[in-house]
Length: 128
Image 1 (cartoon, helix red, strand yellow):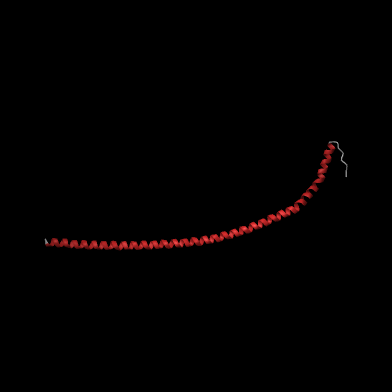
Image 2 (tube, rainbow, N blue to C red):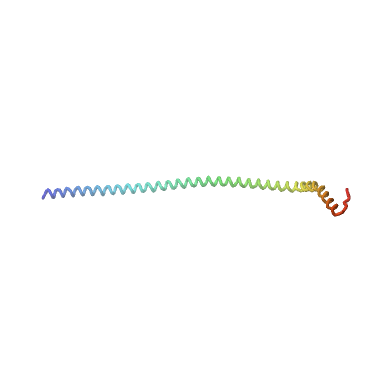
């Protein structure tokens, strides 16, 4: 019976040792998981800061480009207004002359028509 008791005792010691080793390995794995989790959180923070930094830089560059485009557009608007004003001034100067020339070129034709209409109706028109 002593050998049976000795065997049970040895088995209990082996079981106790395995249990302690298992508990120790569980604590070690939990500690490593916690450390990895903390490192992942730090990495996430770092990546978010880096991404935000990139976004801020890109948005500042985009804002500069937009400001440049606005300035260019404002300059073009001013040039267009100058061109329109110059066109209106030129029209005001040249349109009366063009109309006079057009009317002068059409007067003989209108006189001929008027003479024909007058002759149709039996009216004599004195020649100049």
